[in-house]
Length: 128
Image (cartoon, rainbow, N blue to C red):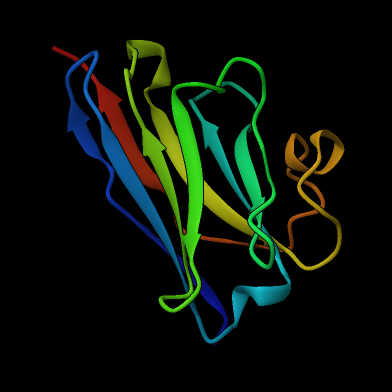
């Protein structure tokens, strides 16, 4: 069974750090673009970052660059999202998703539609 499994969410204070993980199960992520998206109730799913698993080329929206870093561990078949200097507005459910076609560009990474399979999500709450 093909799955993406997220972990690492939780409660963190403003200004703190958190690392989310997205592990591939039943699928080798080598040929995928893996994206991180987040969603709060009543709002559309928002692209946070994405990465070409093969060559580590990455994309960040302007609002995320400098605070968030996406990376991958080939041996562990896992993608990470390092979140630093977090803010209350970063509170959301974070999802990782796989896109078999395309590359880590703004057009791909900001639109959830091309991503064919998704993890279950992990809650991140930024609060003092």
